[in-house]
Image 1 (cartoon, rainbow, N blue to C red):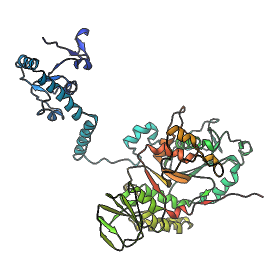
Image 2 (image 1 turned 180 degrees about the horizontal axis):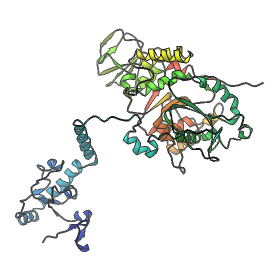
Image 3 (image 1 turned 90 degrees about the vertical axis):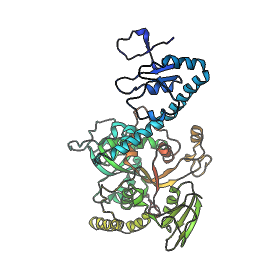
Image 4 (image 1 turned 120 degrees about the horizontal axis):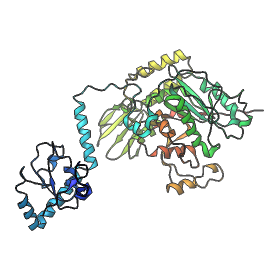
Length: 523
């Protein structure tokens, strides 16, 4: 006895005769009946764990060949004349029945898994792309995966007509119509109202440098709920670089202040990179800005490989074990004698070198890379105080020595991953019992919430740079959601970025040692 069932989307079939795909799998035998072309539902029948019976294929889908010679189905003639005998054979041989039903389902789970289907589409698009012209990307093009992750806010915004700016941008009390302007770098500085003198000092010193031809703008971030804001003369002391934000005030709410600041800036500007700095730190901003632009380039440019499969044995400074070569880069950055680093893949060993004047054949697969930021940062520090035009000419001459120009041409190959560039700290223990020096860093809630006794990698907050897309990711939250801050802002930021596939890049020693802390003493 045969029961014929119909898929629910066939028009004209009575309601009682209509069966869902799930109902198919309740039947031992499923007939694969061709339509106008191939039978699109064959894949569902194969996954059912039933005996699939089909006529010969005239039209093919890509996966058919994986099943044809593997007992995944039984084939009959176009007129189905063998069907009664086939059914009779299976009814008398339960083992054969089980073999076909089980085998087709196992093969379908293997060859029709999400990974296999993704692999097919990747291969198909890769091969098809060889027969089409290479796409020409607009300079504001956004990678599709970023668009999926961040939504429409990641798309470039058109410029709006210029209007006069108010003397103060106060969020929550007046509507600010954003002017979508292009910024190469936005410098973001969290501040408190009583530190007006420090703000003025920063404006007069490191923030006064121009970095031609880049477009930069700095922002001091203050909370609307700052207890000392009433002493802040809004007409005399607040300039266009101060944002008074609707966010909680205080050290324990710094992360929320940063979210509010980034969100407000991105309503008004298109930002390629953000530099975050503490108010009491004076970074060598010109050098840091150039190195930020270089960090955005492809790794083959920033870390060119030298003497492949050989070990520089003329000046091994020291070696250490590391799970991945990025640790070699980080260690070389903070050692001012290190000019090159090598990574032995089998033994997972990093070698730090001062030079590579002599080499020997390596005992294992070895890659040696030059640490270009060392050469660049030394010279960038030397020329940092030159007059603008002279400085720009010197930077151009410096980059010409490694085949680049200043400003860096947009056609130069960029890294495929965004970056976090700063004093990167790995595996720091969560502070729990310091009641003398830094009690506000004690973080038992971090351990309770995440069951971790070490922080994920993070950049120390005194100064760091991030790709613009990370700023958009960080601030692109609905109004009723916010990131959790534990005891310290920078370690909390490490949790925000921990699940992203990004590069953690260590700033070189030459920049690190020139981070000056300063204060204003009043008599």
